[in-house]
Amino acid sequence: MRIIDFIRRAINPLVAGRFDIFFCLATRKLPPWLVIYNKALVLQTEKLILPDKRQESIKVKIATHDDINDIIRISSWSREDAGRLIDSGIKFFLASIDGNPPAAITGLAYGHCYIRGMGFEFDMAPEEVYGVGTMVLTEYRRKGLYLGLTHAVSDYLRENGIKYYNVLVEVTNDRNLALRNKMGFKEIFTVTFIKLAFLKINYVKGLKDKKKSFRFFVRIPQNNITIV
Image (cartoon, rainbow, N blue to C red; front, top):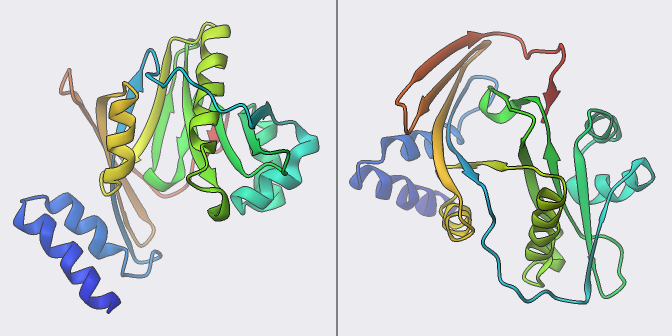
């Protein structure tokens, strides 16, 4: 049944001429040490468009090192990775509902970032941030936690004079792309990542200026960079 579902999902992009989505889906069935093909859109907004009404039962706080166990529980990161991300200056937000322990997390990264899943270096200006994903525990989904986190992020951006909020969404994630568009995000460039054994290739194309850049590398950058 899974094979039939996969074939159906893979054929639809081919029929629509979306070879990028086809290759994304196809290579996910292969060993990641051998080959990876991924493509994503970097989206940006100056103002989040959100419903005015907020759910009072949802509470959001900015995480500290004391919250590392909650961060690990929600994200499934290792203790080492969670600690490294906190130490790098990423601002994490934790959301809870009805007095329960935190069940959702999102983060904001500053400055020079490297997004591992895309082999992408993002060097941001002081007035912009990068959204480090949003994760909600399965049993707490569809309870408003995602929106609660986004409201908290919007407040933080406004209060701290941050002009641009950037996120990266894979082209296969139609639902997230549609949601981000409703929130006021616009595409600023595409990122394509190809990994062939040890060789990594990153291709970035601006959607406005049409500028293109290629980068070939073997190792992940380590100096003066936040790896997310």
